[in-house]
Length: 130
Image 1 (tube, rainbow, N blue to C red):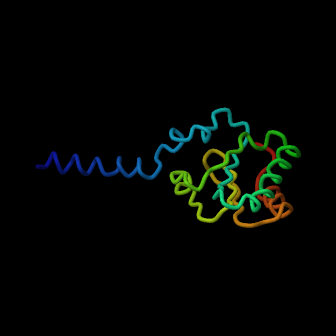
Image 2: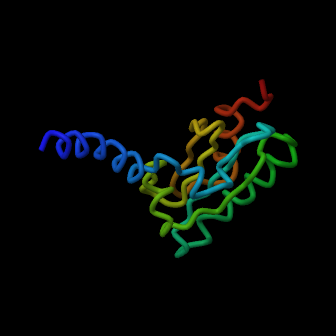
């Protein structure tokens, strides 16, 4: 009886770590930043109103042109990718997250114009890698 109880106590944390995205990088390899070249941009899309996202795409392109090496990768994440939306606590769309070493650096959400998005990225994200 004691061994069953001990097994259950040890099993619960293991199950929780798996269900909470304990190894989200294994599920989404693009999150792995082995070479640590730059941050990763995740643009969360609900795929129903692409017009709201145009300024986000333009801002990302502009940032990549003006600050080469700042962003290692840009990934479009569908609203249906629940593991990612839950892990990064995304509830409004579009949402742009800049992450570095799995740490959120910048978040811009909702309907915003190009200038605002660029301003937020430039003011909040360290453009020079340490």
